[in-house]
Image 1 (cartoon, one colour):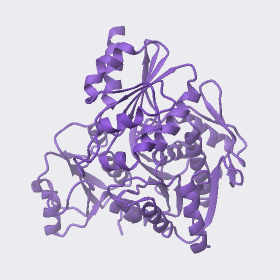
Image 2 (tube, helix red, strand yellow):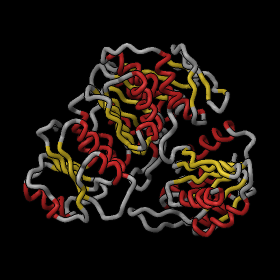
Image 3 (spheres, rainbow, N blue to C red):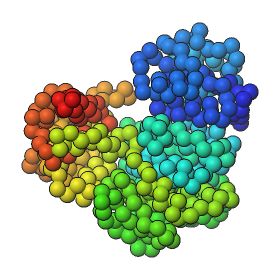
Image 4 (cartoon, helix red, strand yellow):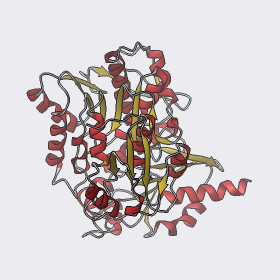
Length: 473
């Protein structure tokens, strides 16, 4: 069991990563003495760590290890068999935990709400944090992305009576976590460099549901076929759980109304919630994420003995301004709205673009997408190709490779040729940087330009926005 208090010394390897920095911050707020190491390159988390007075050594070296370390946490990106600091720690007998292992060990020490799903887990977790602030829920929150409502951090610490954490299905990492409350937003085939197929992904979620403590709760989206299939199996195994549905589908325990747009707010109601909920972020999928967060926070507050009002919950929802790379608004210049979004799966692309179209019906929608990993692109090729229906103009690039697979049997042009079957106005420019001048020249007042995907094409929007902003000054 991990104990975090003023007598605990924690050392984090890869501390500048988004998740690791959040974990370090959580430990610091819990009272532990925290230090760590990383590469010399400067990241946005450097400023956060400095503000928290967490010392960081660079570059990696076994000499960095402090004389006294109770727990060493490390990024799952590093191999404990070869990383110099991890090798040295093992020789010294220091207990070491990968990020998912550390999160899991902490979850075993306090009531934990885990958010899981192929799509929506980051936004749902971030929304739960915003609502927790509004209602005074004494919990910590750890998200896989920077959240503006958290001061552009990935950790929010409101108390140590509970934990809310985003948990990832990749390599079954979430199985380290022991939840009392589990949200499942969606299940479908993804991470196909690791999972064999959809059934393999489903099996991981089923195994995760078995880890919910007796008397705990499973909240699931009734609109998602994968979540429905999961629940049909869980009901056979776990009669000791509270199983609660939310969604637009009739029969949902907490039924959502069809959203409407009013004064650039996405408005909707939830059966059982008195106040109309208003979101600053577009999309029916975002309304579903908000519903999950609302229900979770009400459930947690009830079990922790905290009285809350629907008005306070609604205020928390409306205060949410998004998280980094999730329909993130970079700004508006020359009448052009610049956005960036991490969507890298056909379903996420389609729902995000549909949400933008309904939210901004009068804007021309220009999309730049860069696919991530050869295996995902090949396995879901037709899904990707047919997911850009709402785009007025579309730009595609080479596939952004991962460290796990540097090449594949298809390439970016393969995706372009398949997409051209569905979309009339699509163009292929191999290198994202080579498209900057062309896109800049065609943008005009009233446009919405959005970069999408898990590649490095996000830099296109930042560069064009910065150029135009500089001309204003």
